[in-house]
Image (tube, rainbow, N blue to C red):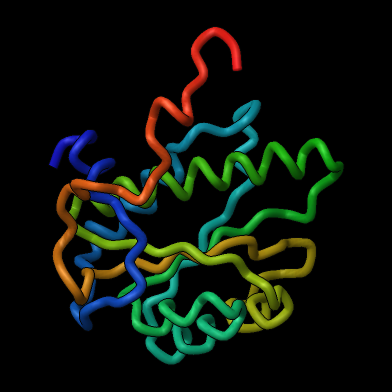
Length: 171
């Protein structure tokens, strides 16, 4: 799949097959996150990878919208240190968004579906994953092969029309 096809094919997947991900594919997804842009090259992120079924079921409880994590082949928890200031918090959150998107595109390129989630119960997430004090689990990225249908270009995405979203030269 080329980049544009991966962009067109990527969609939120919330139901996965029980097929494991090849280790080299999971590594490629993680490498995409590691290579993502970072403000001032801060790279404050850490990624915790979970593939153990019992751990995935526990992780699915840290947010009301994270039920899909239990059925994933792997879930990556994106973690940040407690921010030094409001400014660094904004920079680091933006960086996590970029890392998440690159991992989603790398996954889509491999035919792997992804579905993101917030982390509401940070204490539970820290306990489940052994994340040390001073770090906040921010997001979950569930990965696996889609149970309903393989990834393919979405012909009519549920998105506002481009001419409604884009303002050229002024609002």
